[in-house]
Image (tube, rainbow, N blue to C red; front, top):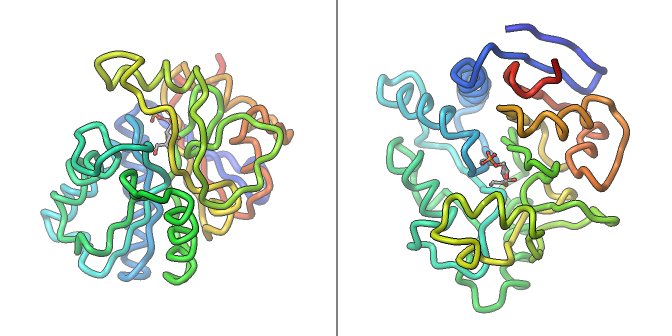
Length: 249
Ligand code: F6R
């Protein structure tokens, strides 16, 4: 592992491989929970955090981490989708983490993909984050196109939680979890960049060569809304944990 301080606001931890990346991010979350047992954790789905969640569940089983006072808020959810649909992010979180730790399921929040009025759901979701006192640590993955949450490349990236259209490239990438591309929902409810920026600390996880282009742009430091993750250069407290494969040779 190599730690580089890029700028005052951004630390980059370069790991040998995915396993080490998962260990590093689980350790940061563990430290946060020990520091503040009633922390609010911002969580992501996708392939990248799966190893982190596995380790957190193991650490919970052995009694090292206690989730009993933890609250979680997830970044996003497809729309429309039922929370019981195996492709939903609610289902994913239940499977990968919530059913494996001693968390109070009523304190785990994922946008409701079955809400009749999605706009109302977005407003209420954002209000809930504020009522909880904000997010202590927000875990993020990064899309091949640089999206974070479902904040896709766009000219304007100033939104709070909102309903958004998925880009054809994200639909194509995410179709690996579905029977076909046609089955991927075309919309999602996502925390906006403005919501993500309210988190006190952000941990961005990036693994594998498909992420090299997006991560390189973030590390170059220019702000470019065609790669939403570059906006993280404006946040005061970001840790990027990546593996060697995702850095340029
Ligand atoms: C998931 C999310 C997405 C993913 C991103 C990377 O909640 O918000 O932004 O983090 O698409 O996905 P993986 O980790 O599957 O490469």
